[in-house]
Image (cartoon, rainbow, N blue to C red; front, side, top):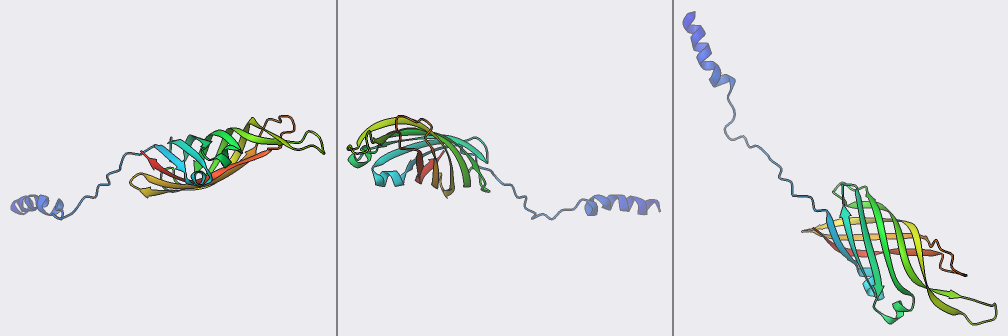
Length: 181
C-alpha cells in the first residue's frame, strides 16, 4: 500500500499538469492610435477655392477641428473672400473616429452681400463679415496607411443682421481627402 501511494504521487505531475506542446498563444499587437488629421476639400478645389483643415481626435467618438477656405479663381473671389470654421464631431462608427458623424460648427465668413436701396434702383454689392452657427452630417472612411476620405454637409444661419443683409443661411460641405498621423 505504501508503494502504491508513492507510485500515484510520482505519476501525479505527469498526468495532472500536461499540456499540448504545440499550443499557440495568440497575442494581438495594437498599433498606436493616430489622433491628428490634415485634409483638403476636393469639391472646393474644383470650384475655385482652397480649403485646408486640421482635426484632433481626442477619443473614439469625439473630435474637434478647424478648416479655412480662400478662393483662387476670379469667379469665386467675386462671391466670397474667406471663411474659417471650427467644429466638433461625434462619431457613431465602430472604428476609432470614423463612420457616420454629427457635427456642430461655427463659421466666420466674408461673403458678397447684394443690397437694394430703393425699389427702382440698380443693385449694389459689398462684402460683409458675419458669423454663423450650424449643424452638419457626414461620414469618414479610413482607406489604409493613414489615408482617409470624408463626405459632409452642413448649414446654419448667419447671426449678424447688417443693413438689409440678405445672406441669411450659409452652407459648407464637400469631399475631403486627408491623412491621419
